[in-house]
Image (cartoon, rainbow, N blue to C red; front, side, top):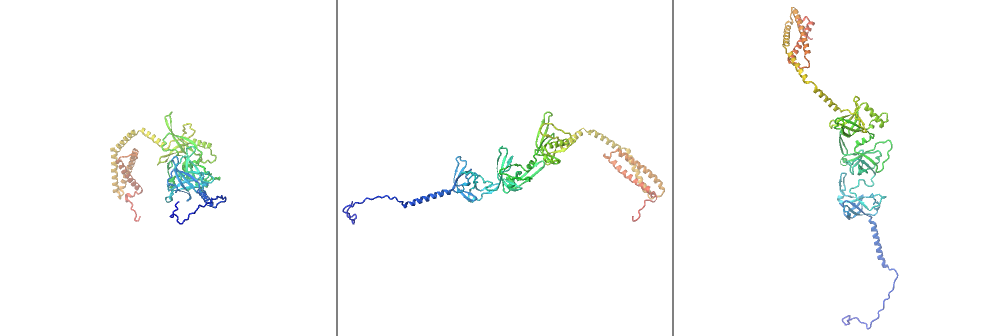
Length: 575
């Protein structure tokens, strides 16, 4: 130790070292208030952790085919425009086929996370039903949640929907099923109409159990679901339907939306007995159109077969079978059969008669009575005949006509169907008549008749142009001319000329009689309808005019003989 005066000059060092006492340690068993501070901090931290964990809500997994528009930490989960959760992470599944979203929901929703809960991404969509999700162009895409029912099974993993559900939770109505042979133009969202009013829509479809038809799932909203009864009938509709059949061209139009989506219409006939409301999931038949629905109302069918030897071009399955203009059945199939024994072909037309279309007065219609009635009508002359229904399209139909004068021709082939006899169509009958007439014309001796007629005309021409006939006609003309001149000269002369005039009149009368006899002979010799020589016609006209003048002159002489002396009587003035 440095004790020089330069180090601590004012310090006085003790002359000798004092003894320091040893510390005494005592154990205090009382609680120190100092530990209250960390204890309170720990309790507060534990409370904060508990409350935070309790307020976080459940964590669920939702799988989608794509994560388009979804961002971890940003994409929200909403229900009725209220935030109920957020996407925490986005990752691919182990097979890289889908994406998994870890979604944290708010507390209190776990009771609704049942098997009926649904999730889908809301984003702008353009479909045949319209445009939706335009609000997400500003706010961004989000996941919409539809809570499930509280009585369902709680789940923590869900399959997200690729499109919004057509029927939201809480919608009042009833779900039904429709059985059809084929889907046709129907699609999810196709409307269901009642009296032209939108009453529901198609939810989806799938194959039936036998894989030979489809089952269409539909939803009928309130209050129209109360109109669906056990006797309700459903059929397909489309925006426009054009059909060409034996009845002609038929154009049917419907709503504009059904033009693209198709649709379903239904009706509930009025029933005398009270119809109960159907249960959800009730199955109804779905007809192709309203016409098929009408046909289905006639359930009793009587199959028959007809055989035609002529052409059936224009006859198609579905063509009507009519009796006196009333449809009583339809054609089902057309086939050709070959008879090897006779080396002939025949066309077999099978169809069905619908006895319910005919009302019997005695009101005891049955299968037996219908068969007996048909047999009676056949015995009385009922025959099947093909007739043209539309000359524009050439469509044919089967017409049942009464031909009691025709024999019953049946093949006797055992087919299990009632065979109805047939008669040729009107066109076939006309063709047969024309063919028969042509055959007769081919054997008609036209050349021989023409040759004889030509010879007759030549002989007639020679007779008419004979010199004797010509000289007689000329002499008659000269005589008449002289007579006319004489009458002019003697008109107004005195009585001595009366005797000569009387003789001339008698001679003229005899000449007129000869002329009339000559005309009769000529008329008997020449047919009035045959063409005559021009000269004969001209001579006939002149002789007729001369005869008329002479007859008039004779009548005047008989009524007024004094005219030969005094001349013709002049009319008094003023008359």
